[in-house]
Length: 131
Image (cartoon, rainbow, N blue to C red; front, side, top):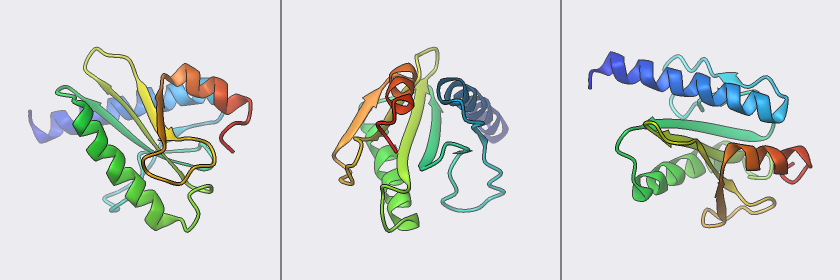
């Protein structure tokens, strides 16, 4: 897969994920203008969350674990208190459904994550369970 194709696919995934999060939360979630900034997250506009998006063909659970460890470490470096910057991994494999992995509400341990569909996240988010 060429670099341009991969970048374009990633951008499409980010736009799709932003639209889904906007629809389920009511916030204006959009792609971040990273401009080559290291450790910048993919989406902005959802208060309290650092969102990383992965749109991947050869998905495995162990790969999701690697992605999760990376975003968790980045969030921990950017915030002294993970309650104010909650890591979120939103991913899908080719032709598959979107999944969201994030911390349980009020948890700060990397192992205390929960994985769900975007609509389930939206239901919990909208009744105030995350912030």
